[in-house]
Length: 157
Image 1: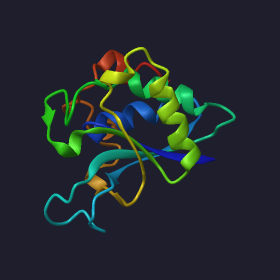
Image 2: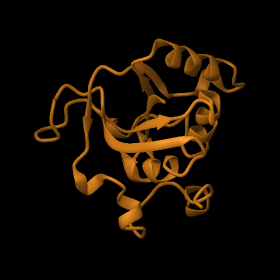
Image 3: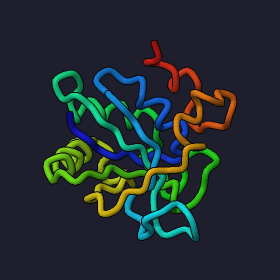
Image 4: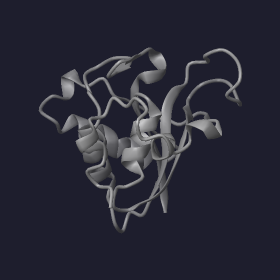
């Protein structure tokens, strides 16, 4: 199994979407690259993200990037849907340099590469979100989500 972190705006929808993809074995809502070790206190620069464990024998990283780009506006800076602020920025994070190299290659190979605002950075800090945010749209399917429902549930079995 391998692990990568996707930030695509509000983590509720991103987690709900990713958890149903072929080859994804688990997801966890969290915060990437902030400075705090807990979820308590002031905003510390984090991006809402989803820790994504996957089986590379079933789904490749470029396939995961394709899926991710299906649910984000890659040109938007610090906003996805109605959610606005730095914590809603888009990003791909990993502790594996090869994951980050593949992500950069993926973007560089796109015709719109010069317009893409998705940050690609090493994961420097990760904090699991509180339980109320875990699998939120599974438990509360009518809560707000910036991802259209037909896309959100496209891979749900």
